[in-house]
Length: 366
Image (cartoon, rainbow, N blue to C red; front, top):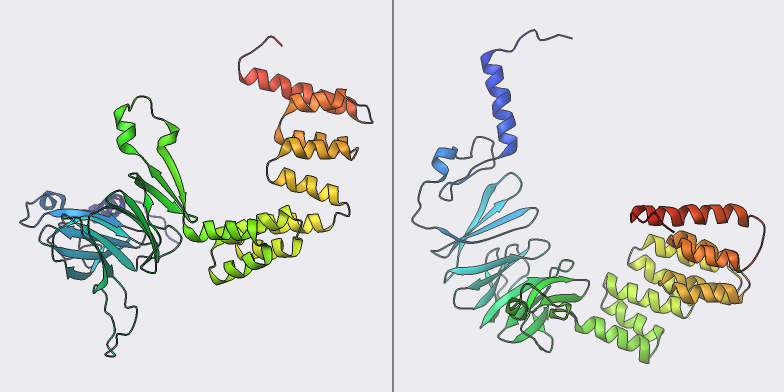
């Protein structure tokens, strides 16, 4: 054990350098960083002009992709910023996008041609050779001006081609959707699109109707099977096309029909632990109307759940439901509509809750 009485100038410089190193690092596009701490460029040299400027960039949590005007594409690993790969495009890139696991890169060039690059070795070709990283796939689309990878599936993406939106799964397109919206997000088998052209006509007063959600085919088909055919056939379809959103859809449909076994299996597949606990709790209830009331509350149909509780002469459960929701006005109304032990304490709690409600809104006269 040793107590340092003073720091030498060298030690002070090392500490200062370490702190700066953790804050910000500069790299020149013409350099070849190795990932070592001393491979970064001095700030004074980072802004040196280059003959081949950057034209597009994209990144995930582990990969950084930089495209240059000459058509070269550089792949860096993150967070250590190490140049690990170089490959070339036939034309200048306009837009780059990586899928959720950084295995495939989508490129839209300045002429609107979209191609895909495999950044990892994927398969074996007919002649026995392996498709190497950076080799373009056979996919090519023209007149593309926007695209978005799904956040939860590396083989699923949506793209805009003229005034049509296409959804591709494993490079197989679904039927196009007529729209001119810009793709905001693609998650849980739903695409959120915004009509920017309409918004910019009156940007001070945007309309919610200009924000549109589209469901992809597998979600629409699953919903149709559940509604028209039945849970059993829909379950088989979802097993063949698994996705957490589809399992959640099946679980919700099974809950509506009080098919607890199917609901529990579906919740397990989509890793919804609260849903599993809810099904377990339903299984311990003996009354079918009570189960239906709990399901109604689970899906947010609180008025219906309250009415069911009152029809079963379980005003206490209706009050507990409103207490959980923080609806103290309704709690007070339910308490005054009947009598029972412990009502005085609940009345006091309800009045305090109502007082807090008005206090938060600076309304002092009740």
